Length: 60
Figure 1 (cartoon, rainbow, N blue to C red):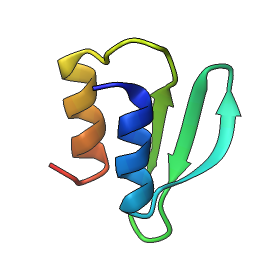
Figure 2 (tube, rainbow, N blue to C red):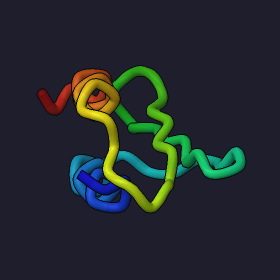
Figure 3 (cartoon, rainbow, N blue to C red):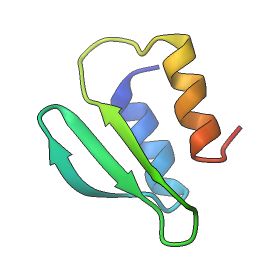
Figure 4 (cartoon, helix red, strand yellow):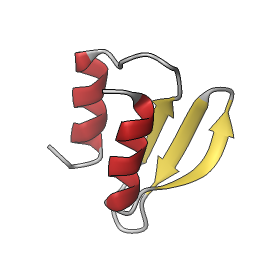
């Protein structure tokens, strides 16, 4: 999955970009705890990284 696709899924769940640090976009949710960094590169994400982000966002 490309990072842009993941960012669309996060946005649909209510995660918004609060800041950018280099190529990393940091997302925050109004009710869910924590922040989620997504590296915006033009290649598919590693499966372990994708699963970790989805679990942290409570989407999996």
